[in-house]
Length: 110
Length: 115
Image (cartoon, rainbow over all chains, first blue to last red; front, side, top):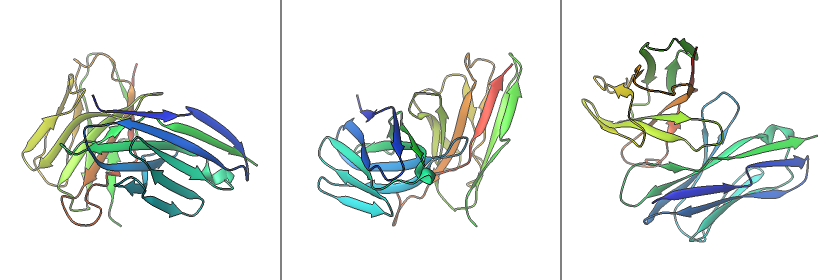
């Protein structure tokens, strides 16, 4: 069964304190891994797509990396506006559906 | 600006009632999806449609129904058969090919509460 596990469930950081979120996955062939950001009461907003092990993508303070079994979302010198829930999802090679993890709730305090 | 519009934002339902959540997109996307989000759980797929007049059940379709009469519209009906309908419902769409074809675009969501 295809599965996505995100850790930690919640993370509290001080402004400027860098850290990483983890997304481990078990899937029958990986077509793509996706990171989304979700603010409370809103729909998820697309951040990155990664397709193959070794691939990296960056956007402002965020950097996503991918290995054969997991992905990391690195947050460098976070600011309070980075507070949100970060969702990871994978698309198996055999289908068009996304399998989502439960998310990591990030709180950055000033 | 192109996007997905979900309505209503908040909806209250009495037990035994059917309710319909609206989802409209002007992105010219072919595929549309309905997800349910509960605290501490990942998004779960209810129904999806890849073309007009065709749709498939997702992982938790029981107690829900959909229609896809127009490319732009994919309404979700939560029936009285759904035993625990209180949740946040998200509609999404995706284009079939070209750059960004695998990326889902989401609406702002509809929160349904059963009284």
